[in-house]
Image: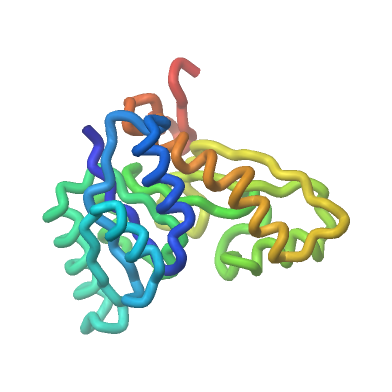
Length: 209
């Protein structure tokens, strides 16, 4: 069984999507063993506790330096027996050593169709603000493996969402979460948990594709 650690910083809606999918059987052969938050006041911690999941707070600013932070994170992941790390609205840049230690075992959800509106500075509402400013007609969400770049790892799943003329960044953010993020993140976890995702030449191969 795949042992997942979910990293969070805020409300934890994507964490909740995974919790619900494990509970109702859309994710099989996996469990969430630990939730790590970069903030002690993150509502995601309450979601985890209500679901009976162990939690831990590890803040970058509490570490002596990046190496100390890296060691604290790796220690927590190894103690939990982590097989897969899921970034669900995690707002701290991962240390390189952690990415190396969990190569192709860290996934992230990004609220756009990568390579559009991604990379440094593109997070949260900023992504949707830029999509509306550019006038694109379709946006969406992407689940990808994490590498040393910013939103540059192999893409696992994407789902498109149409932009409506009346959209604001807030309404678009909500619809992208409901129609894309909360659907493809659990699906990606299930595919990985059941051995249906591999990486070849920086591209993913899913199932028998």
